[in-house]
Image (cartoon, rainbow, N blue to C red; front, side, top):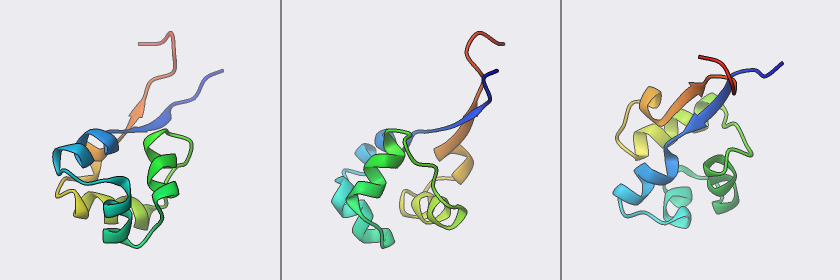
Length: 74
């Protein structure tokens, strides 16, 4: 059984702000590796980190992160 998963638009929104992974990491006090892991959906950020990312990218957290439906389901 497939469950919903947390997806994100981090890479797209970061690019729109012309920020590198390093620059964004420095802005919010985390590492480039963490930014990369979140972008690749290998890591689910804490609530605090998600809110910091949304604030740094000047976007609502709900537009940055969203749930996806399981494969094969409407």
